[in-house]
Length: 267
Image (cartoon, rainbow, N blue to C red):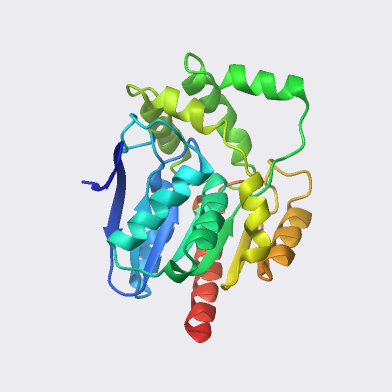
């Protein structure tokens, strides 16, 4: 059963397991906290307390929030770290990476390190027609169907053995009352605030990017650019798309553990 973080307009669901220094795992939009289902147990076994959180309006979280996106997720991350008596290392995937950067910028004393997985930390260039088509495809009546059709593309490369069952769970969540609307509102977030914060990150930071991530024209170049901006390092994960944490969990876990060792040495 999930635990719940109480926020002013609703609850955010999360799981908590293990003992030791705190790690907070944050998914991207349209995803569930169970995207870290392979990584979280390994981190617990390595001696860490691991909180896997949902986004607002996703999974077991409530859908009555007035706003969604990078900034709102960052506020929720900060509140969760405070509730669990951090500091914490934040692992954020996709939009969750932008929120992690914003949380580190807003409350640096609560964040001891960052792992940015398939990170969206700046807005991708796109034309007006492309943005309008995306808005229509992910609008409430079509959101679940469109996302179901699009997910295989994001899982370019090796897919986890339970991909079909996991995709069914994601789509079932989107079909729950209020979730499609929350998802559609989340897709409208902008990443400019996160990009502006990149140069102000002063904790050990690692970028983890799938070498087949279809969200970037050149995944390696994007990973290198982000790493340079934050003064960190990057790791390319072979045969993985936008979700290295479930497509190549062993390689992703090893990368996270390397960052955690650097955090311990930095501390």
